[in-house]
Length: 545
Image (cartoon, rainbow, N blue to C red; front, side, top):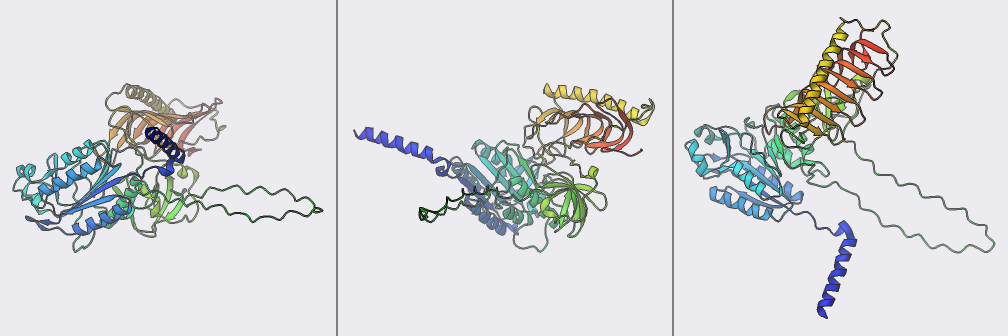
């Protein structure tokens, strides 16, 4: 009888848990390991490590991690700490490993140096140091999502002994999000006379605890801060093999207020007129979300920053920005805080929205306001492993008004006709590239963007494997927009550049030269009603009329 009651109670309890829904769901378990190696027997004291470890320990605790901190570890103790962390990671949902201390890259191998390491030559490293790829491989084998952040010391007297330098690109491992304080092979910048926390770790500890901010967006601000502090000489780097957006601190949601009980009403008098019907309650308005970007227009920098070549952490710096510098926002990169801007010297690049102030002055002309620019993304069906996209593809070129037909037709030897013929040849090459991409040929790639847009064609990895540059559209390819519009032609540095054909929804098309995602140069617009216009174009505007 007791068994029957026990089963009945268990069933009722299970039903109550299911009915309660997510409110009773167990919170995500997070574990972190913070390693700080500052006192080396063969290299002396390493400045900044203690402050780095303390800052990251506090930030990770604030982000909800159970943190283990270990300082000044020899090889045996370092291996033991990592082994215990892997054991705790097996029962967790998310892990985070942070290391500050000496590290060295030699040839194709990268090493973390324990405080008892005293290598005299390269061969000593395998016995006295920890192979970084081995550490990452063990973390991957744990089967849990893990972030690994490394802030190696800039001054490393042991590196010269073994003929080494800065850490190179690490093992590419699914399930890991690896962050370097510097680009692979490029050492961090040594700050003379500095005390306290390194610029990279200080920015990382500050940004990762901001509620509702994806880790990638937080690292964009880290990169801006570090690039500014170093004059563009140091740029953080990441390698993301997690997939999807990782938010360390959830967005703050206001708690719902309990309803207020209305006071009891006295019954109406027998001879009182009937009360009018109650007015319906006003519709609840959703809370206004803070804009993640800024509309096209003129802005000024509110703090020191850097214009980057690409909308990605670790990209090459184009030009520094000082507070008060004016820039024109050309367009926003979807699903992020990156903006494509042009400065007063005419240089184009990318900044984060937090770098700029409120808009001032008039917006740029319509053509300049068209969204355009490189979007970082990753292959999904062929080529390197898929990576999350932070954008939705190139811009959709505007269609000029119909009725601007050239009554005499297009001369066969005109620059516009020659451009159209080159565009037709590019179209054939693009379709061939798309077929090869669907067949999974090396050097060709097909990728579905989050908004439904699709690219099929050639690609090139900029900056080497594991770099922030990502695979980029380069060569010939076909881009199909979700609204039915499509482009077939040449690509350069991830945007429509070269010769190609854009076909619009009504059957109209432009065949000619493109640059930065828009018609730019000689070409022919052929409209759906049979009319046509040939000449020199800049977006939807014909310049030679």
